[in-house]
Image 1 (cartoon, helix red, strand yellow):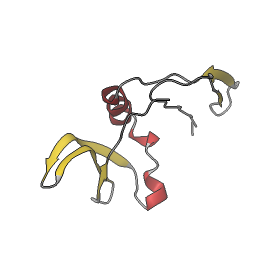
Image 2 (spheres, rainbow, N blue to C red):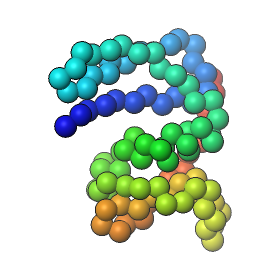
Image 3 (cartoon, helix red, strand yellow):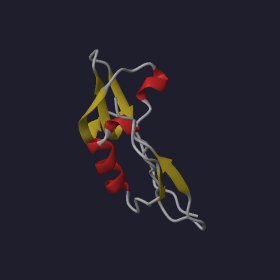
Length: 98
């Protein structure tokens, strides 16, 4: 099994942060955090890599993004996830800057 770590940042930061990335049975690498300057880029990253969303922390299984900017009765959901047991999760994200 391979293990990967990903860093997501939105906006700008005064100091570059770094993280250690290590895949099983491979040499570790230190990489600089890279910002995702727009909310659309964050949505793209989460859509392409839904495992970045800590769905297990709220009791969900493996997830798949099934909707982006989806219209709801109360407004729009940034992302709509479906887990491997058919449960829905609505994700809202926001950009911040310092």
